[in-house]
Image: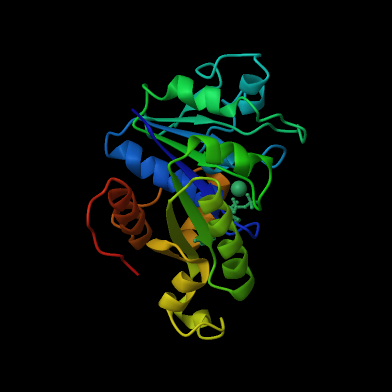
Length: 242
Ligand SMILES: Nc1ncnc2c1ncn2[C@@H]1O[C@H](COP(=O)(O)OP(=O)(O)OP(=O)(O)O)[C@@H](O)[C@H]1O
Ligand SMILES: [Mg+2]
């Protein structure tokens, strides 16, 4: 039965879709059958980051409208066969998410993990994902605004029944962190009020891959970091790599 995770942030552009894609890839490469669903209607990006852009004919909007079943909307990752992806609606800004839980419930027995990438902020996609998920992962960049907004999201997750709330600090750079206004990473963690799952650096490899749908290089620091995050999701007690 699937563990359903949702990825959220207050501020936009913190790296939710990027992190959702690499986390899903790592879980799938550990032989966990994984489904990644993007709920950011009208602002899709996972199709490009994951390399399925040319294959995504149907999307989650088609599934929610009953135009096709969820399996028809799934594309298999070009490099990770255990990973299936459902893209967000390309244009529709008025997607009705009210039966989203029925969709995830219908897939519950076929996957080990379902990862829902939500839109920035606290809107319809966020509330729809809360009904399905057991864990909320907040992606925040180490700056005052992202952390403050992350705290609002953390509180709203809790108020919507998600008690397991984790934090990924993304786009971290030791060079710029000293200007962030935070003393140290504990300060960021306390600001969001969530348990730290990982710290992902500001990375040229990640930025370039987002454009061409490429994979993280074996042996690279980024690959090791996502490997460790995925193990922590799987309940293993592995060290945080920074
Ligand atoms: N660790 C990183 N290093 C460098 N660039 C990154 C990193 N993480 C994300 N990016 C870049 O930041 C931009 C925003 O990333 P992404 O689309 O994943 O954010 P998002 O939170 O999903 O955005 P939105 O709120 O619009 O859904 C992209 O150009 C992406 O390539
Ligand atoms: Mg996104």
